[in-house]
Structure formats: C-alpha cells, structure tokens
Image (cartoon, rainbow, N blue to C red; front, side, top):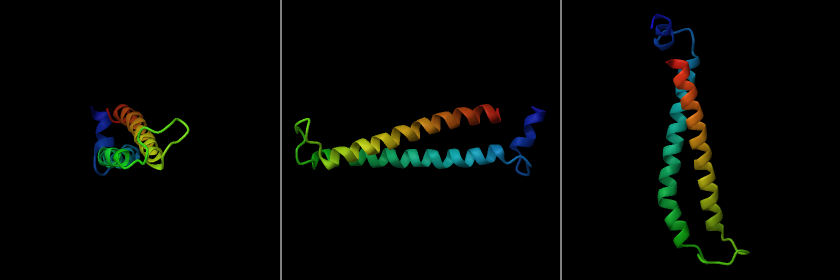
Length: 92
C-alpha cells in the first residue's frame, strides 16, 4: 500500500490519477444529463411525430433526433466504461 499512497494524496506530484478522475466526473455527469434528456425527450418526440407509423421511406425529424440522442448516450456509456475500468486499474 505504501507505493500507492503518493498517488492518492492531495499534495501528489503525479497529477495523472486526479486528471482521470476529473474527466470521469464530467463523463458521468454528461451521461446522467443525456439519460434525463432521453427519458423525457423520447416519449415527447415520439408522440409529436407527424407519422409515428410512417412508411420505411419517410423518417421524421423527431425520429432522427431520438436516434442521434441514443447514439450520443451509447458512446458516452462506452467512454465511461473504458475510462472507469482504466482508472480503476491505475488507482488500485
């Protein structure tokens, strides 16, 4: 445990774990915000779609917004998973 005490202390000269924790903090908050937006936004956008059961050729703007939001959420989730795993192995 002695070799890791310097990395976790406040006056550490190695800022690498603290920088990763800061990035992880912002990724977690972005993921939470995107989850809240999608939780409210998907039902609203789907309900206001002019043609919810439209043909395959017609895709409304609301459906595209739902897909874009879902894609952003998925990529934030992947980034958080990889960074969290990397950070866990760096600190512990």
